[in-house]
Image 1 (cartoon, rainbow, N blue to C red):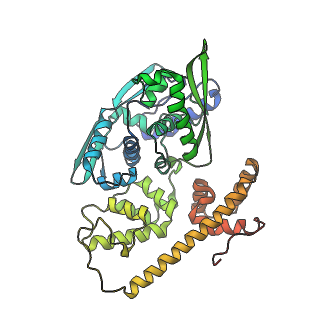
Image 2: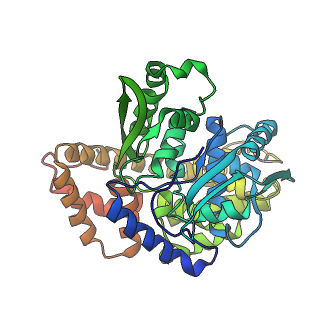
Image 3: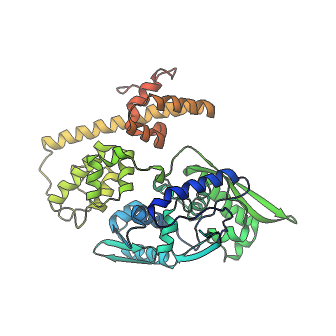
Length: 439
């Protein structure tokens, strides 16, 4: 599907040194002309299922850092499935999803370096291969250059995409998020919108009332409920007939995955280096450390290393590591992926009893932390948006550690690694006080 670009910006070349210059030019132009011109993007047409859309985003996330430097990319199939929220080991479904991505086209239309219009089309994946439990895939060189340019293609939050239950809602989110900087998609012809939603060849949706009731309203409702943007649909009519639609877009407080940037504090950590050594991409490693903390990630790395030494982890550990971090695997879990199950002891050992006590302690900590955050969120709901922003700015100024500030900017009051300071900050601000850990 094509959306014309009317913004006169230079597209990024494959030379890394030109990337920041192109982004700066893009931002300057869109800020100056956003009231009448809208950012175009690469739009992906076709009837992709929810799983296929999630899979596509996960593949791009994994390959992003090396899009311009490597002709192909490799990811452990189990890791890919875990990232996509696909728990089954049914490889036929995975093959079908990869086949659909190879058969789906991405299309763009924008102004090129010479000021002339540039139109292009490419299959979403130029090829994909499954062998030995590893998925190898590639993008065409022109598409890779466009995908790497943040002024052309905006990445979405992998954590947020897992919340979607509707393929239409995820498709709407993807296509609207491309325009988040300008606050509006601009007016789309309804035929264009139908193609973006993958219903252009269904006569049922030629009737706008049905399209609105079955696609537009439910999708907008889900996007607003589970994502980091809020949408408002507007329809323009000609001769009383709906002809165009646009979506007004505002952020609602969360940050995108690719706002992570290059966090030196994370990249220099032992946990980050160990994750990369185990086949985890740099950006995913940053996400895990920022989301769970170095201690938690290090604990799971130790666990997986112990399982591998005992022959319980087959082939590459990346997929098992992803599952361990997501599922909080512990030594007593007897994981389902173990190739050789360990013999069950006659009774719990002292070490197992100690681990059980630690688990119970962690569970109590988690419940207490949630109770405190629920009270804090309730307090924030009573405040005006200006007051909430002032509180956030005030707390951020109190943080003297760059890593903590980075976590707070990304996750707000839910930042796990900053919780002790968040609780201390709010303790005197809540009239009834925050819940006691022992209470």
